Amino acid sequence: MHPDVNVRSVVFPHVPLADLEKVAGELIGLMGNVRVCILTGEMGSGKTTLVKALGNTLGVDDTMSSPTFSLVNEYHTHSNNKIYHFDLYRLKSEREAFDIGVEEYFYSGNFCFVEWPEKVSALLPDTYAEIKIEVVDSAHRKIEFLIHG
View 1 (cartoon, rainbow, N blue to C red):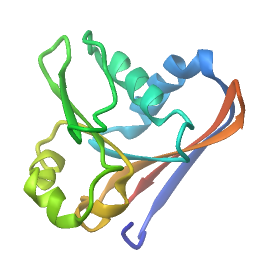
View 2 (view 1 turned 90 degrees about the horizontal axis):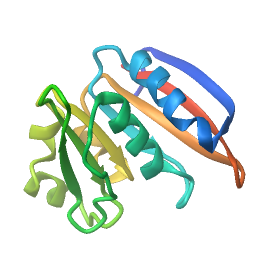
View 3 (view 1 turned 120 degrees about the vertical axis):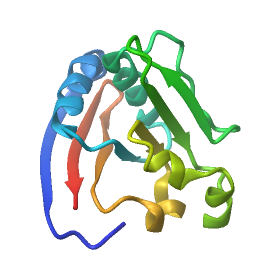
View 4 (view 1 turned 45 degrees about the vertical axis):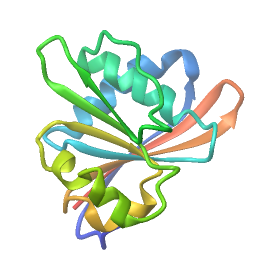
């Protein structure tokens, strides 16, 4: 996305799907003050499932679902903070991202979890997190967490 001045990485090499909630808690801790997080991985690797676990960790009670058609869903935590979940798979251009106000979300100070971020890479803040998900087998994932910037 941006040329990296400083990248910090943590790898969870063999995560059982049943342990995603536990790993989500660790990932939120690793994010520190970073509020924008992109998720990369092949279709069906578990990006949306992990975003749900991250939302649960942050205190979202609502049922979280993929915003494939709406592009972004907004959720509220117990403490009334907002979380934005983007699925930009259907986004056709960076212009479309401007039209939905992606930059306003990214600089709102709220958590933004972004699936399929390729078309908005130029709009990401200088410092952002990335979670790479790789299928190990039907019940396990390799999760790599990085902070860029």
